[in-house]
Amino acid sequence: MIRRSLFLHAPIRRTPRVMLEQMLALVDDDTPPDGPDGPVAVLERRLAELLGKESALFFPSGTMAQQVALRLHADRRGRRTFAAHPQSHLDVWEEQGYNAVHGLRMRRTGDPHELMTTDDLRAAGEPLAAVVWELPQRDLGGLLPEWQDLCEQVALVRATGAAAHLDGARLWEAQTYYRRPFDEIAALFDTVYVSLYKSLQGVRGAVLAADTATVDAARVWRQRLGGGIRDAWPLALAALVGLDTLAARMPAYHEHAVAIAAAVNADGAAHAYPDPPQTPLFHVHLPAPRRAVERAGEEILAERGIQLWGRVRSAPGPSRCSFEISVGDNAMEFTPGEVVALIRDVLARAAS
Image 1: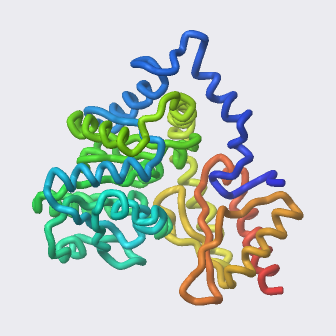
Image 2: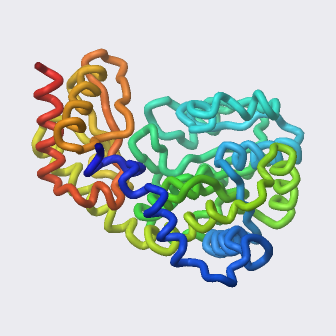
Image 3: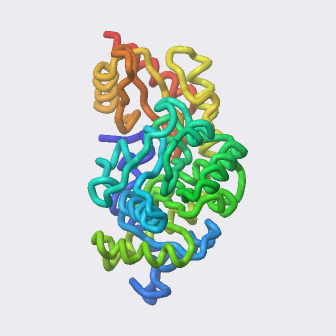
């Protein structure tokens, strides 16, 4: 049984009772399920305003939202190729749905282990419909390009006639580094996707924000793909809870992530990267094989009820692996010293 967890989406704060009680605080007997005053419409308006876009549209998944955005950019430009980092979520985790469903091609741009650069984009060598930026880059430990670099990259892409699309699933984490208003960050991009269950820790769903014409066209594609679901209000309510409560805590989460990473690196048994973390998200690299580390984590969970990760990532070398720490309320319960002690316990068990 999980009693404490470093893992952001551990079930201890996501039980039906806990989430329903939070949602009930936002409604009364007069709250309509649908329509202009329903939770979905309210969420769409709030996120459009926050992101400085004319309109926003709820989707049941981020996978669908991003595919629709890229399909629209491709159809408008008569180009079928978009560029994205080799570790883009679209490619690594979504079964290349952009190709299977929409006939789009992804040009993998940049080094798999480094951020995409202006030179990488300049070397694309073919007309692009769009370029995707994932901010922050989760599989690189939450890395972000510097603001001026990002602006330069977007300007280059726009000059070629391509659209700029933001995979902002974790935009709230990115904002803690850029320290700019959300609408200023979003203004760089033609279309912006945000997740409702990652940073905001809702149940499911996503929102795509853009100009009104793009959102109207996206609504048609949402229906074609089966995403125009009725009674989506529970998903919207759960996201509104996070928008009202969690968004303001992100700076504190970032500070705690920096403190944990500093303690890990000062101890030296493992290595936290980036150093310091740019966001509340970072990776801990361990000098031990993945399967041995997984076994150690299972033992600690069984003995002490502490969940350390969602999954352990393999590394090119068989004697190394890593896991992600994404600081939220769960990780705030652990002092940096406790995290270091847990990592040392994992390594000792993995070596035995």
